[in-house]
Length: 190
Image (tube, rainbow, N blue to C red; front, side):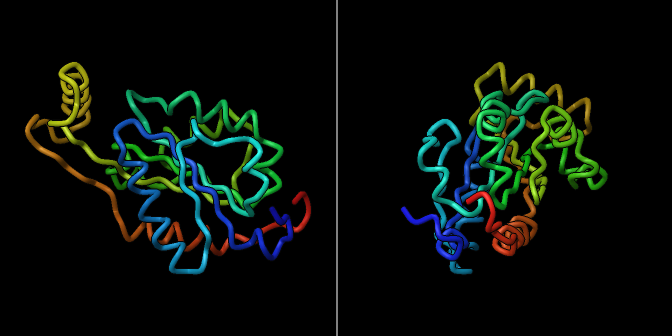
């Protein structure tokens, strides 16, 4: 595989850690936008990302969802294991969480979950994003449904266990995908 900067400038790896599939869906939407802009995009679960394939991409995007106030532990492990590579690439990180439905918590500077994740690591992605997620009560297991309803009650969110509520601003997702494509691919470290 070529490591020529002009070749890598059109190759993006998008990794996700998704609990219920919505982060994967956001990645699929971003993939569509990025392909329309001429990017060769590979989307895969962060658990499936082989080490040897990572150096063939000029841009790396990591998407991580929240469950019960925490990102999946494999996100931090992946970042720690591959920090040097991530620092040598155009990189982006986004968090998907329900608290981002609130206007005062929907940016990288105001979202408590993304801020907490960033404090736990030294990697500084070039681009950060936060997207509101989706509540899909009917698809949750009984205990998860009850716990999430309690959390929503406490935070003044929807609690009807028969409802599906999507909070994602898809125009915001599209803009983020465009911004990823605009990230300059470093010539050093490739």
